[in-house]
Length: 96
Image 1 (tube, rainbow, N blue to C red):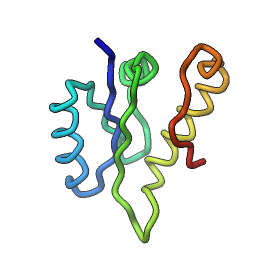
Image 2: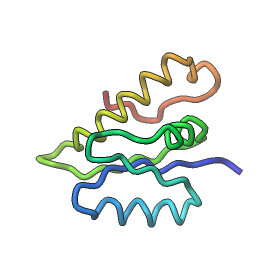
Image 3: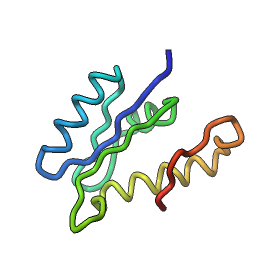
Image 4: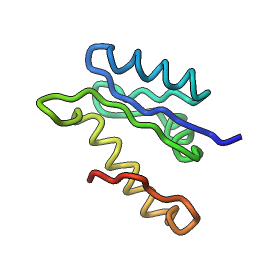
């Protein structure tokens, strides 16, 4: 069975409710991005071990939150540094 992670930031709780529903339906590990744009080391391990990652963020004036951008940037940089794309993993969308 594949491992899935749902990574989200929620400013007022609306995105959190959607992320919880998606994670429950996908039997996924739920990773919350805090107000400072950080996740725990255990959550990073879950993200790195995932076969699929579902991202969620509120939009403010048409763009995702800065906390979400911070995590997304860190994830893709780490992915590039470890060469995961060469190991068969690839990005579906990269909005850097």
